[in-house]
Length: 255
Image (tube, rainbow, N blue to C red; front, side, top):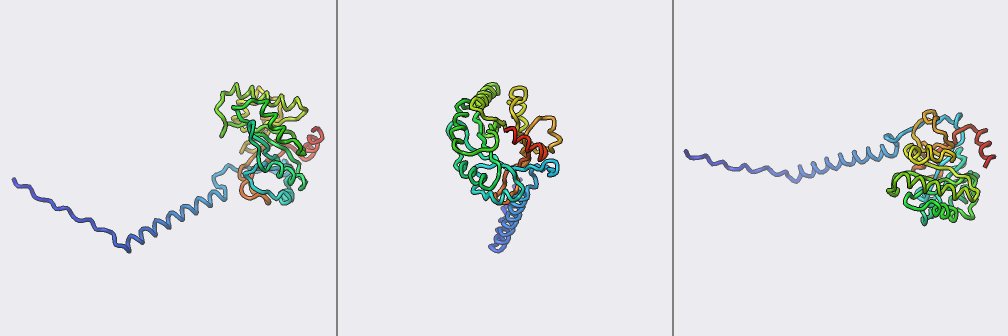
């Protein structure tokens, strides 16, 4: 039997006008999507949010580094911010380029100033302590020295070694007469602090209501990475002292 021949139908091509309309439509959809993403980011819609009662926790503070750019601490201080922790150093060689300027400007504005060091798990603890102290030399500080220990963007080192190096850094700082605070999040607290460095004051990063972490003894709580404070461009970390105004004054008198 003879087979029928099938002729291919020519596909209709879009006219220039239809193509332009299609491209314009796609462009508008992309612009709307981009605008929505910017709105979500700017208004922190998907970021964890904690409501802090200023009557119960009246002592507010921020922590900053070079990533926050040039800060107008006079404006910061005029909005009920009482203290600031400033990044000083990291590991055994890095120094924050804005550390001394931030400390001087914050002190001039009347804020109480502390310094923190990002702990590198791959570096010797005592060497890190000496680097921290050398960086902070000559700077007037009102608050204890802070060691920031966290796993994100850090070296891959086993927990036991990390704890030993952390203890060594604490011991080295204390041997020079310095009071020490450890900053970390919930995971870091469980791995490196709880049952190992319980005698060191704690500054915990938690997006939970303060009452929900009351079982963890802590001096400060960082409750947001996305705060807005006059005088700081962009997001800034928000903190509270875990106590009343009178407890704050009592603690300061003990330093």
